[in-house]
Image (cartoon, rainbow, N blue to C red; front, side, top):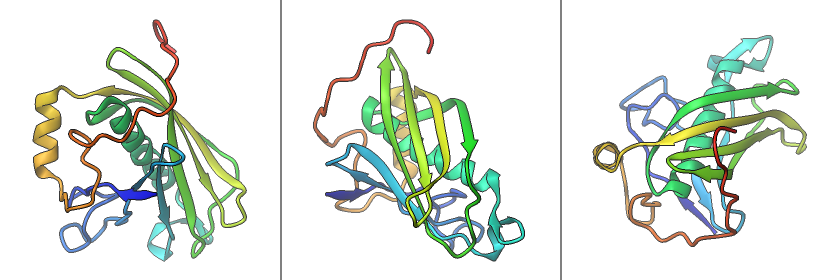
Length: 175
């Protein structure tokens, strides 16, 4: 079952085009069965890096935001990116949907390590990412949540019980 995440109206990735005309307007969701954050984006001419191909910086931003949602579910807190590594495999073509998903692989203290993939319509990997995030303080998370557009049915990262899923490995020190 997919449950949507809220959006931040001014965000360049998940924002509302009426508030931020340059937003990619991606609607992220939580896939409860797979325990992944997921999203879909169809790049258009305004997103080109060169000759009909999605700009790599935009693809990196999409992966980063998807990773952040997966980490937020794991920590029950909003998280900030500490490290992001992206490996581009194939070009993402304009007009073709890019499917993005992210999942957590380890957590320790306030930190979370997650992985993500962006797939072409054929299922071929376009890009793979790994990242480390840090949970925001409860006070910072509440302030961010107050700025989100949270509608009934959306995942409430600070309040929903999304199930524990499979236990994650406890990692000591830095990954």
